[in-house]
Amino acid sequence: MRDINNFSVDLVVTSPPYPMIEMWDNIFSTQNPEIKKVLEQKKGMHAFELMHQVLDPVWSEVYRVVKEGGFVCINIGDATRTINGDFTLYPNHMRIQRYLTELGFTPLPCILWRKQTNAPNKFMGSGTLPAGAYVTLEHEYILVFRKGSKRKFTNEVDKKRRRKSAIFWEERNNWYSDVWFDVKGTLQNLNDKVTRLRSGAYPFELVYRLINMYSAKEDLILDPFLGTGTTIAASMVSGRNSIGFEIDETLKDIINNALSSIEQVGNRYITNRISNHLDFVKLRKQSQKQIKYKNIYYGFPVIMSQERELYFNEILSIKKIPENIYKVSYLDTPESCLDNEGNEISSISCSLPNRPIGPSKSFSGKKGNQLVLF
Image (cartoon, helix red, strand yellow):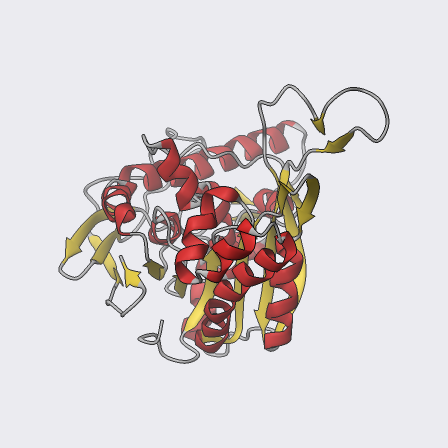
């Protein structure tokens, strides 16, 4: 990441390879051959520490490039593994949180992502007798950090970007909860199951939320473990600039295919958010609860004055240009979702294909000696 300037990134959203998960043993051992030897010697905790030492330089670079007031969100799961007959938990989230705190980041309340499972048994082990089984790991962590003090928006241009980046009141009440039960990997569509697992792919919804919670439009988002490109895709849909690094060349075509097709998926996400909000408004009116404000772009009612300038970046086109750079053009102005009497026109009326082209966002890449940016 040496090509990224100091203090230039507003938000990092990423999910690294998980230490002590067997499918990533080879990746870690390639970076440090000592890890393979230690695993063969059945020294689990030693291998755990060596794997994290592979990740540590990346976190140090993250600290260098993040702006004062910027955020870092890391999706990480703990690992369970039986080595030499001993079943053990390897607390990845604790090791990463300790290291980033030592770097100088301020740890903030984290999010528990409760992953849905189809497993019929809610325990690990066998039998029904005491001390014969262990609880299952059905959650992962989203660690949240801030660099320095609270971010400030000091000029009118930045303040307007922030206002246009608002989320709906009802979304806030869900997104800022410390436990997420409702995030599913519905947009992961890799035919090769091994590739999907090795990529560490996380759901579009997860990273899309984080980007909208911790950054403003036109901010720069970084993912140092790009995987299948989900972070860049969600950044495009959110009207943010983004950079990603990935060392696995086999994922390049997957990333390019995902980014080339995100226009339709992204605009559908925007349509669904607006449609869900209009359903919320209907229910609130039926309950005879007051809705005081109106959004100035779309015309629909909103709960708080901060939602009046909420604005969605509907994608008009995505173009790939040389050296792994994507350029995104957005629709300039939205169409009102309501008719003259305040009734919803249709669930897709806020996305019109013939609106003029809006500002473009570039998602650029450079090649380094070890990390390849797609």
